[in-house]
Picture 1: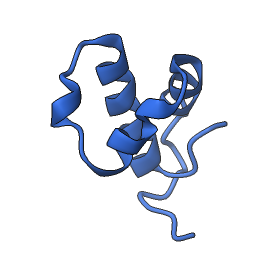
Picture 2: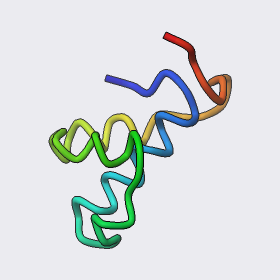
Picture 3: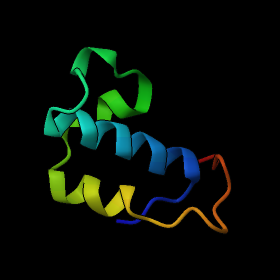
Picture 4: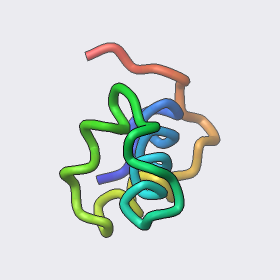
Length: 60
């Protein structure tokens, strides 16, 4: 599932970093903290989404 906004893509990147052990999990907040339950493959797909043309935030 690709990211729908730049903020979602950034949060996925932060969660992926924590999942791989590069960043302590305790430093995560908000959306990135809730994304830890996703698989590494799902996070990789979201984090690798190009930001060009994506809005910064999307209202649901």
